[in-house]
Length: 394
Image 1 (cartoon, rainbow, N blue to C red):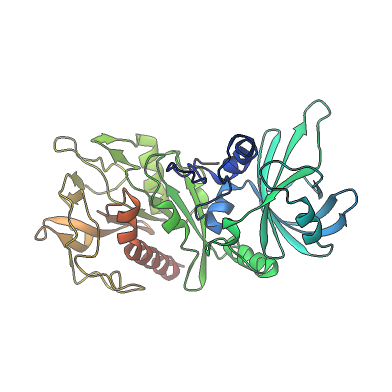
Image 2 (spheres, rainbow, N blue to C red; image 1 turned 90 degrees about the vertical axis):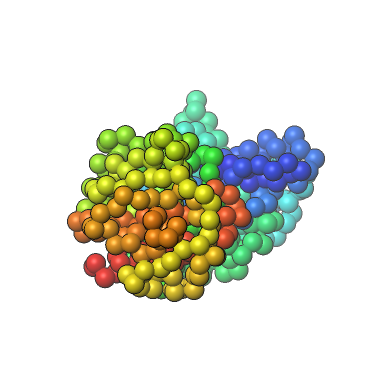
């Protein structure tokens, strides 16, 4: 699981943390904090799926309000292969400032479908479950001496997760249909390489769930060795993931993997780069020369005749509407320049075909939330442009 830094907003502003880690942390935090410790920032379905080692569908087969237990029959593995045929729940204890035991006893109904997303890490499982249109949390620790799992403990119903548009789902059967499409064979698999410091892009990119008739299966990593790249269709090199403060971050093997990925038909989208005057960002991940240059922050650009619908669909993007920063120059005629800035001297977006695949190189400035919000329409346009390419390459 990757690091998503803090789901909890107290009076201090935290970074995003990985969602399942925060579910586990909530148990501790409930006993330590007087303030609201529920998830309080938006988490998309794609992020929840990405952070889970397992996503399973099942049916609630039994609810015993006297013993305060319930059983879930696991019927389908959507992600990972669960070792559980039956997930046994207990709701006889609670931790935190609110006692939801009576509520969960009334809420759970035998015969209802349920989705369980969980992270299994060693002898610990942290999870959230969705049934009858509501999310709630479960957790369990393995008895290592007896080598067995006990009942999964119910902790609480989520509040904001059940309110935010990006995670609220009123119908569990409809939600199951969405997840089947999202994780099905026709889905476009997107891998975002991000850094622990720069994570403002995550909610926007992971929030693109569908492009035309194709669902987007999102995942992300901070590992530049790019685990899972061979199952990916689009690799998004996020803000400052390839270089920062004049320090280039990719090694030769990582560069080679990226080039081979594109050569086999993959698409790479690059969220700009960071160069210093005497230390340009490296470009060994590209098969053709390109030089990263330090540039002043600006928002003007000029599309070229080769841009097609890039600045038109699904959003009309005009000069002055983007947040741009360090750019690129020194390109050769193998690049198709789609937009420039600084009187045509620097690239805003360029396309490079290589083998069966394509690079989309940009100079977007996505360091902070307000900059990413300014570039939101362009991020979505780039995804549409990339998916159109994949569809035509079938």
